[in-house]
Image (cartoon, rainbow, N blue to C red; front, side, top):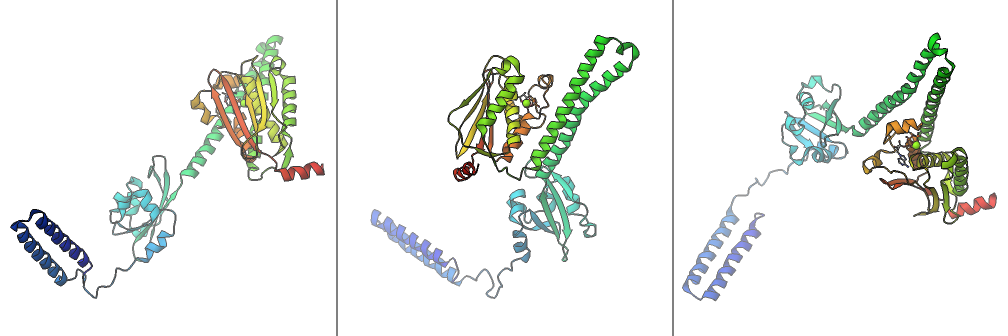
Length: 410
Ligand SMILES: Nc1ncnc2c1ncn2[C@@H]1O[C@H](COP(=O)(O)OP(=O)(O)OP(=O)(O)O)[C@@H](O)[C@H]1O
Ligand SMILES: [Mg+2]
């Protein structure tokens, strides 16, 4: 019996039942005629089906699976096999990237990219050749590297590797070197200009001018020093990022120390600093030097960018998931929403002129972000233009067991 015979039986029975219903309902001779006709047709159809030749010869072998399919299915990156310029096999990653329709398609249509087309149809002897870089396959920013190799049977194996992440990292590295050089070159150019003027006997002889120039040179040299210090601490923190800090740090004490230092060095603005500690927080697991740097950067920003005479509040409170919450809030002019996601990028400033005039390197928040990441903490910056900014840092508290051991051992 053919595989569709049960379907035919069901359909014939349905026709018979429908006609019988019509007969019962209408009670007319037409129903009898319809029953006879439908029954006859159904049985004829059934009989025809039973004797119809099978669609496959009885001795046909089942289709043989291509062993290459199993092989490429195990690879997570997109792989295609091409024979006579047509795609014959594609793994799941290739179908997801290029579309489910590519099997059977011409290679040029499957990977619609001018750089790819030449390599896909190049003579086998020219393969593999250098990897081909493809931009914009899948998404507009995506970058793929395509390699084509020749198989023993003359087919071509096409391998696509995702290079989007490494390309972005390379871009960041290049941008960083360019930005750092620019930041260093600006004060250096100022210093060289003033040295030249002072070296001129006429211009450099006047004592007040000389003093003014020397002051500018001193400021610029110090700015360069700060920049180099910040760059070095950033690279040290990054180098340590996989080594979590282990020492217990009393954050309440550290906050008080930082407050006292900044209050002493900032005159009137120093008096705007307020510390609020809801209840004595447990110690956090940390690196005391880095946490002190984090506090200096955050409180320093709040003092610089907040309005003089308005409070800068440093608060400590229990946070979620056994963490300690540190917040630094100011009542300055705030930061517009579009800048918030970029504030922790190196050298990103909302107002470059103002930041530079205040002696900023634009690395403060990048350093804060890396310190928080190294401490397995969380950082959030919320701001309301015209009202002020609140930076929240959550840091893992030392677990209560460790805390007891350390207190007893101390
Ligand atoms: N509390 C704040 N209120 C308003 N703007 C802020 C605040 N904190 C940071 N910003 C903005 O974010 C930018 C980046 O801050 P970041 O601390 O990284 O650099 P900086 O303060 O300019 O330089 P540095 O920290 O080296 O002194 C600042 O230039 C400023 O525009
Ligand atoms: Mg800063």
